[in-house]
Length: 262
Ligand SMILES: Nc1ncnc2c1ncn2[C@@H]1O[C@H](COP(=O)(O)OP(=O)(O)OP(=O)(O)O)[C@@H](O)[C@H]1O
Image (tube, rainbow, N blue to C red; front, side):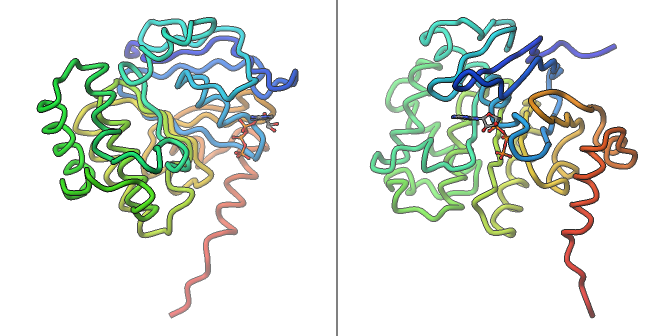
């Protein structure tokens, strides 16, 4: 028997400037499941992630249905979307410089959603911020730093802490390690993996990296031209791709592995 869905899209279309970037997409994420989204450039991965996170870019409009924790996001008011974000779904973007205010102390930024969604008072929020920083292996003193003073890896950890802050049941991550060096990226993914395991949080992860997909996700959906061309358990899809687009991605990943000589 399948688990209850934490997120489900039906016939989702996302128009940007009159052109469909996502075109009739059906996706179902069971509670606690980890889904990767892969596909060539322009396939609609980021728009799908944004639609599920309730954070479409300016000028984009959605039709069809996106339900997260039972709430319909298509057609919801800004207030309605703001309630769902943080409570039911949280987003880690590719570039945390966009998600975090560069000049506001990290602690204040982490505390804001805690006070809004969990009703914590100032002291309670401060204590929780220290816990969250520890959860992403950052020292509590960092709460006083501004994002502009941090390294890229530290900023992504803060963005992950912000996303984990409200213990939402679904985390959407759009290439969260794309801007990081490989060792820093690996450490962040390991941290993400441990947090999701500890809390049973579901994941929708956009990635270009099939190694990351295989390490973090149980299921994969392959997009092309705004549509699903293939989906299923990661080991099965990667071992026996059923669609040309998937075959090309697998082949490209094989070719990109550098030859190591002793
Ligand atoms: N803000 C935007 N303005 C105009 N067009 C957009 C915008 N965002 C996405 N699009 C278009 O919608 C389509 C899907 O874009 P999307 O960013 O979801 O693709 P993607 O699969 O994430 O690509 P990439 O791997 O290159 O990031 C593309 O044709 C893209 O050009």
